[in-house]
Length: 400
Ligand code: SF4
Image (cartoon, rainbow, N blue to C red; front, side, top):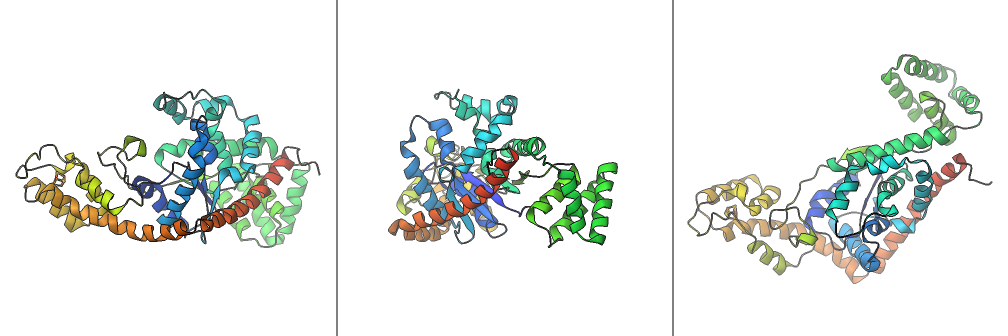
């Protein structure tokens, strides 16, 4: 089987805010030490909704990359690259589009949703309809086994799986496959070949899923097989097709949703965000002027933390004793709102300190970021080219 690999991307929206950090970046930092990860700037995706104003894409891309590095994404552990610098994504997108039913794209829940939300833009475009397919190409081209997503994006990964399955079904047919697969079984050696055949029969004749898993595990452990024979044997287990594209799994992101300064979802366009590297004075001012429970008109009026956006920040940033102190002090009017906000200010500043330090290195020498991305693009491109060789061959486009 292909190695485990995680792929995830973000649109270049410019400097990141703390909502991005808690919603995604923190998870990337954790993932990079567990599995090989590819993280990319989805600059083509930015064009699907903002095709009429590409002027900010480039600056936003570099700003965002500095924020990734500041947040702790480590280029010695993860591959960082820019989508448009690996043009194979576009080739796979085009080839997949040949066989993807239009209905699959039209029924993606975010399609209508986004069109309604972004009603000020004309999104009746071919690029916008096709963006989930481009996302599928972004993932399938690396034969990724896992995609970190929030619950709302699970249907996108489901569609990627359907697309991979359909592709393998249509194009995984190899001339003389059965014979080549049987030869590959022999290469397993007498005992293993026998077990493989028994497990394959148990799965194909009696539908025993456990037998399928055992056979896959055995193939994973087998050293003396070429990559192509290994893939034939994986495909032979389930039918008579080679697995060219891998069906990725959703990996649900454990993230805490950090609300904005007004308690709504944090977003730059709502004007309620705190930048990842917000300047100390500006951060302090933003929190100090945050709205609180409207019932606390005077210092002596008791409040209700559940009606206050500052409390939401306590839930993310404060330890148990601080939360108890704030809740009790709020309800009894024992503390004032400015007092209550101070531990939140301190905690955010503390969280940001190492980020500011890491970012400074790249701000002082932007060529470092360029070099990291150039390396990442090379690595990503090599992987993408491997997949595209198989895809072209399967689709009769290899011309060799
Ligand atoms: S005391 Fe704290 S939780 Fe209560 S209203 Fe003021 S800021 Fe909000």
